[in-house]
Length: 345
Ligand code: FE
Image: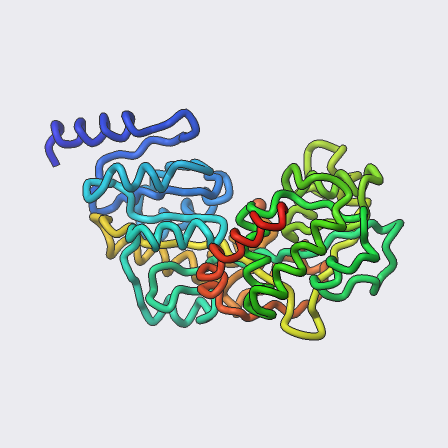
């Protein structure tokens, strides 16, 4: 590739880079180079990408941003240097799919490694890890067995005792979508109304803020993703150890459909100039070796069922996960959002 063309691409990338974004993207089409647009923080990916580089000699550039990457990809159009998109939830994966930004991929390796309910039926995206939306309860104020199902959180018994982040956050929207799938729209709306009626305070903060609120006695019950328990426990800020100590994690719906799970996942950029190599990276990330690394770094559950959870996460014990296709969660997300708006979650 000529210097001039490379220079042009470099300039364009800079022009579209917002203050949120870090990482440089070089020109596309170098045969041993891949560009990843990632909603997942680079430090979580680096050990894996280093390993892939060792195996294949591939140089990988990461553009990380929690927001704005989809707009960037749309603006770049067919000239985008992106090869791979990584997200930390199904909602964003589906947004890329809906905007026709993914190319369908189907290989025997990916199909063998990633269970059918954790991938798009058309091959537009694949789950790489499972994140379990658990209930955190006060060790001191909630007895074991008092909550068995996510449905229980709408019971008036919990009035003034529950904390959550906003309903419109992708994690909660996906959870509500799972309730719609299980019970239908009307029952899911009734549940959401009941939950809101039980809140100890206006929805606010992130998942960890709810554990903090439990430790401060503001509420007794919260909804959060399981890995935050470990992130708090291992945090360099000792205040967070207290938040983790105040709570007990429980899996819901163990006697019926299983606990709701979300995924982090991956898709092949429609305009990737290096699809063959990009697919190789997708296959690598679904492999046993990469999946165990993946599970270690962020305390997530591997999507590949041949791989066990990390030693750390095993303290939570065995649990039954809801096998509802993640694609159904994505389909029901807009309905869930309308319910969230109506009930003021
Ligand atoms: Fe998270």
